[in-house]
Amino acid sequence: MDFSQTTEQVELAALARQIVTDVLTPQRLAEVGAEPDRLDRALWQELARSGVLAAGLPVEVGGDGLGLLADCAVLVELGRAVAPVPYLASIVTAGAAVARFGDDAQRKAWAEPAGRGELLLTAALTARSPVRARRDGDRWVVDGVATSVPAGPAADVVLLPAATAAGPVVLAVLPQRDEVTVERQYLVDGQCHGQVALDGLTLPADRAVGAGADVSSWLRDRATVGLCALQLGVTERALELTAEHARTRIQFGRPIGTFQAVAQRLADAYVDVEAIRCTMWQAAWRLAEGLGCPTEVATAKFWAADGGHRVAHTAVHVHGGAGIDLTHPVHRYFVAAKYAEFALGGATDQLLRLGAALAAGVA
Image (cartoon, rainbow, N blue to C red):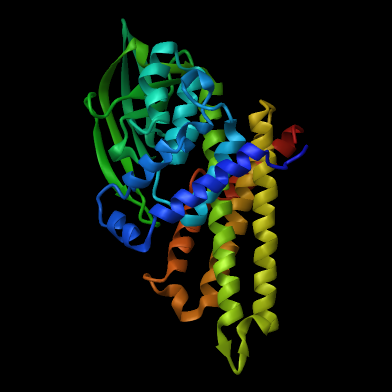
């Protein structure tokens, strides 16, 4: 395995970093934080105009076909800025799923506009009550409550994995047209997610994007690896900010970074960031190559959760009183890391998956 990035991936990441730096000013962050959906639509449109959104999508839907590894390179940059845009939900997860499993009409109606930034797509991967669907003639009848749907209140299309008598199916819900209730849910890091309530919702038969357990697991694996890429960016930048603070903060006549305890915390944080980096790229590479990788994905998420927890707390502790100031930049990285730690399963959940794989002799 060679995890060296291609020229295209490096240039795409550099472009994303430049756009985020230019658009996402402190003033813009404050403005977005005051908006109900907490989405920076100006940044989203700039990413679309530059071709960043479409870069990882297949050429069949107007993308450049650079794939998941390019998506992860962009996600790392978005994580470094804690950028309030739904790239993971709309492009890496839902958009890619429609491109891969949808029919031509669905690709044209949803995936292509998503790559141009004209539609927001997302996927509902957690549920308060099981989401179930049944066929009734030429329609689907759906019940259940999906929770913590990324960018749910602003989404034009929500991909919804549901259980049926014949096996899992992924259905597309259009909140602006279908009879669903979407309530805003504000998470620990200030993100606005949605709770989608489905009570006997009827959908046309052509809303099925894909059938089979492989579609649901494909969605979850992509979302999990993408979340690890975001966490890599978050922790990488948090460590940089913390190291700079330790270099310039003078206490007892010397920089605090020269004290052994502080230096050891920073060294441990560096090891954690590199562990997140290595395991994320390994899982992303295997996923991009179509190789089985349930244990690699679980390992990557374990390090994103466990290592991310330690890096986030190191950043706060080394910053001292400033670390708990809600207006200080490091606070954004702390809460972003806490979200990535627990979303789609925390460290204990991943260890249980790895333990089950070992017990079954498949790891």
